[in-house]
Length: 381
Picture (cartoon, rainbow, N blue to C red):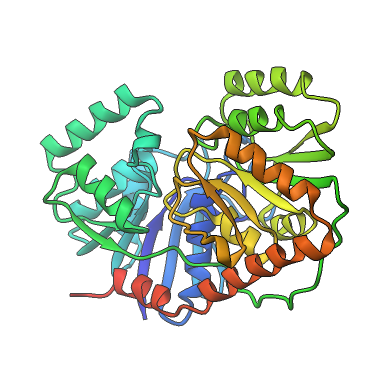
């Protein structure tokens, strides 16, 4: 069985890094029996300084039947230590997560090439999309220019989650870059049987599970809700604050919400709690400015909870399937209309959408072609 050396800033048991971490954890679980992973990662979660109590820092830990992880401490993190790990670890291919992190994205490409590692796969996790490049754009564009001129990504394979991300990668790194498309994998679980949900007319429980940042468009969601003056709306926000100045703007709007809208900030939650939180809600609201996949969207379908998202994701939501709505961000009024329409629904009307969301998840999870795409990423040509 081939061994894949993978380098990622944050991994399990962490959860604050969101979709990047989820995507890889799902991939490791789904590829059990096909590949073994050796993972180099930090011994702290995203935005945390206290090491995980359940792992041994600066050593290898078996964390899954097909995965071992080396949790490197802040005091040990250095060029020499990363070079030592690459030199002393046996592997058949390298899988690098992200673009801009020096120790976990840039340096591993250099070390893999120095060791003549063979197959080197870099997954951008949406970081080369226009919506992501617009954040701290000057620094990112300077880095990408240097990467092109230095040939950093020469003979490297980029992993894209879909055609749109493949186009973004080629645009950012050069038309001669090699890109392979493999859609992101769902959690390795069995879907629970669908059961009807209770929904009172003129009441709506809404949730979002995402970091607080301009890319996730939390402020837009709050602006939409500030225009909803009917019924009783409860909006629970889960996720780490990524941008404090941005969150301050959100807090200002929360303080001035209409009396019928209650907003609650719940902080970050471990990944294993997300499904139950989504299941207890009636709508997942995330008007993101761009996603290469959107794991919370899929998890909402798995929880039989319809979604209200932007049209800046790969998810296509035909009206007749009743799984949710994907709307253009330049039409805020339509977002308001959908929420007010949901408000009016009773259990009988609402459950057509709950069942449609559950079916969306079942259809996606039954597609074995996605697993085959991910296996092909690491196979010799």
